[in-house]
Image 1 (cartoon, rainbow, N blue to C red):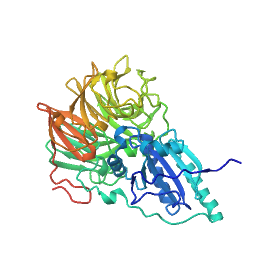
Image 2: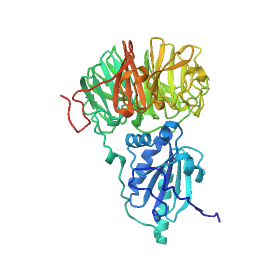
Image 3: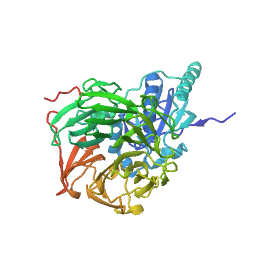
Image 4: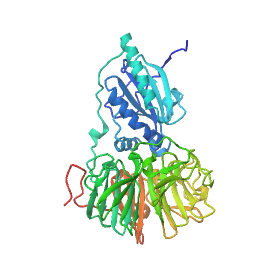
Length: 503
């Protein structure tokens, strides 16, 4: 008979979020517990959250989920940054800040995400790593509840929690804007936390709101359509079409500005589990967290964060297919079919190459659009744990989970997200230099390095202005490229959904 393993107790002297006080396994005796070992940069960890929410709702009187946040990046160790991630992803269970990987080590965890299941008597009964385990967990929890009902060792009652969102409500006009796009038609903002798009002039005068502000996957007029945490966009000026990466719907949307309608052009609304290169009809092919888009000719190139690949959609044939990346998470240069990426989250082009913000390897990658179509690393170490904040040349430069990249006037602007900086990179030499931000997670206008940002993740250049989606500041910043002066755009009349309506 396999010996039973008592679950190690959770530290009481560490920071806890989404709860008034620390929780102990002893006080939770009688309940099924899932410990979710996660880190907020990790796309696989984010994919697990809807499964956990489903299980929490189904078994709310007998299951307690505790997130154990074991940080990968230095920036993720900060309690305030974890709190912002809890708000951004609407996490409603307690989260323990696992300082120094103490809990991770006591449970012998080896990978993000890992879900550890503890029975009502306080014993570890099973664990799973990776995503896509909802059905297995559902069956296991149901079985444990029935077993412990028969033994009289289960305690049915709902746990009362004080959530971070009760302490800090998101009633800001913008909520965690992920990306921004400056075009001839105006400024488009992915108001990701409000599940909508905001269209304004380049000076911040609101022209239209696209989407109801409630999460969903609904086509129709601007005021009927629904998105779910939209991110990157690209614009077809000739036809007045905006294409949108509707990230948590795992879909691509087409916004027709002339007809004022939103249509789904790719994705089924379900997350794909197939990481192997493949292709199919747009509306019949499941996608996996499309994060950003770039239109080149009649193709849409997609930074597909979930399977660590770059995809292409032919807008005439409506076929979507893997363009580059094996599906393995890493940094491998070479041909399209042998290359590997790690959660690509930003994409731009100079017409000859695509440039990728490859966030989990904290690197900028280049992908050829003309023969020979080769993948290369422009700057950054290319290693999963090779991050930092170092200006320099090529592989000597260090970034920290960069999410945005924009090509303009022979240079690449990079949102070095977890360093709270904007950097300028030469795609030819790989030279990488900090130009904006002092590295503090703050909101401060000013010139050059006298300014500050808080996890900026989207960039767009038009004329002599750079626009920045300053995500955790819930703001759009504008930079005069002649003087490098940063200002914060004001959007008169813009409110959170259900609060007020622009004039």
